[in-house]
Length: 157
Image 1 (tube, one colour):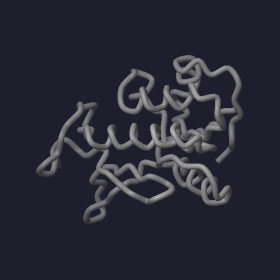
Image 2 (image 1 turned 30 degrees about the horizontal axis):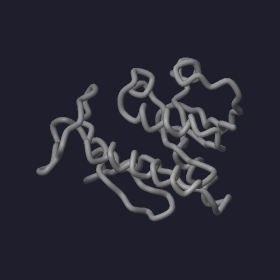
Image 3 (image 1 turned 180 degrees about the vertical axis):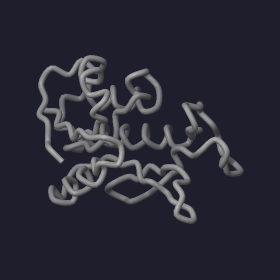
């Protein structure tokens, strides 16, 4: 079963997902954590839930650090190849170890356009496992169709 946590940007979707993971005390996955430098959004890091291991995921294009391996650019953000590979590695380990439930943050405009974490999310949804996944409300209907999800429940924020 797929459980969706739906909301706008900055509405608490990731926090809700993390809270569910902590309450269940089982499963694995990742969240996208905002990183602020001097009270300004620097970008995002991807954090594995079970180990708290992190990797840079995205940053403002005018703020790219040294040794950044860009996968692609979308709007004002540069996305890290290492961050996407890290998400894929997490999911591959979840699959190989049969871990359930799976927690994924998030489906947004990128994933609906088959970019970002699209392949990682597609892989998770093909497992027929219990999945908790955040999705931006403005792409929810499109995401359900894009990923071919027939049965799901919506968890309110």
